[in-house]
Length: 409
Ligand SMILES: Cc1cc2nc3c(=O)[nH]c(=O)nc-3n(C[C@H](O)[C@H](O)[C@H](O)COP(=O)(O)OP(=O)(O)OC[C@H]3O[C@@H](n4cnc5c(N)ncnc54)[C@H](O)[C@@H]3O)c2cc1C
Figure 1: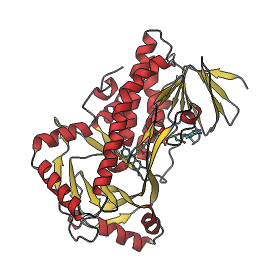
Figure 2: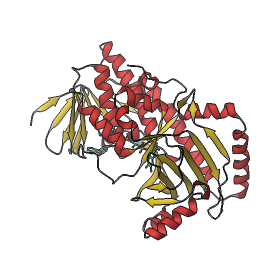
Figure 3: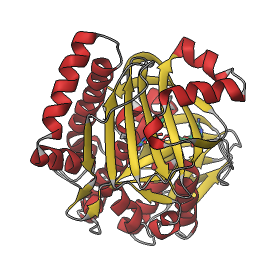
Figure 4: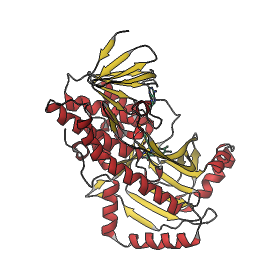
């Protein structure tokens, strides 16, 4: 079969691959030929992924710059406040140890958006850009990297070639392996249980994080007075909980919830993910750049995995657009190293910070709990420090790429 020439190939059409394609198309102009390959169909699956993401303000700006936010907004809940508690499983009350107003200069710092709403909006954003070819339902069979070009051979027999291949093919990235990039891996021995609940009492836009000995239990507000529960348990216990009938599952859920938040009205489908950290030893190779989970996977306790990936998107698009304007080879390692310098330190520091938080909180040590509670209490009485933490979580600190500042590339 004939080879099809493109300017940029993107392996993986998850949220990161789709955002990359739309942002590249906008930055490089209508003549740029961008190809995304994904093994899944181009229809967002209904109901089989109950995850909802905490989308930081900076990420929201990026989605808005792709003209996809209006599509997401009806399904997005602004988080106006965050409550944090630290207690044992048997405690009848989960008192709030740290609470803060989740706004930066009157702008909401985080939105909760379901995976389905985000992916659906990004698929529509991609479909509106004629320079993008989405090869959906096509598994990559082989990745070929040569000095002058990269090629993706699909199981359908189609072959695409381009000077740059971006790996957005997730945690097990085939492209990363083909480029010979190794990872640092860490298994938390935890499983993330996710479900959606309907609430009786209005949540008022409040997100809750209960630190419990087996792992954090997050209640993320959704429109329609629903909430996404993202709940980390030891893997053995998670297996037992996931196998329970509805009444048993409800009992476990209610034991971790908080009486203060009122009753749970309904419980939706359950899903689970093994929780592991991984970091690619390099984010680039000749002709290859890694983005999103292909480059890093972090503990979901801070709700930052996708946000880190969207920061990769904004930085990579800016680096490639600058190089293209200067007439440089966009897949050359010297071009891609600027992206590596921009994104790797932030990703490494974030991954280890979330790892440390998980270790500090996921235990039942009385000594550690006393220290933690004293620390959280101190932070709770320092409004300026809380403002800094909110700004950091909103992705608005450091060397922020243009798309995350709401500026065109
Ligand atoms: C329980 C849980 C809760 C989370 N909560 C949050 C949160 O609140 N906030 C947040 O920011 N992040 C959160 N995350 C992290 C977030 O889900 C990921 O960081 C994000 O989805 C990664 O997107 P991606 O596009 O890089 O990878 P993926 O979503 O994994 O997409 C990879 C794509 O590549 C395709 N693909 C893979 N291999 C091939 C192949 N050989 N051929 C063709 N296609 C291929 C796949 O079909 C897939 O579509 C959470 C994660 C978990 C597990």
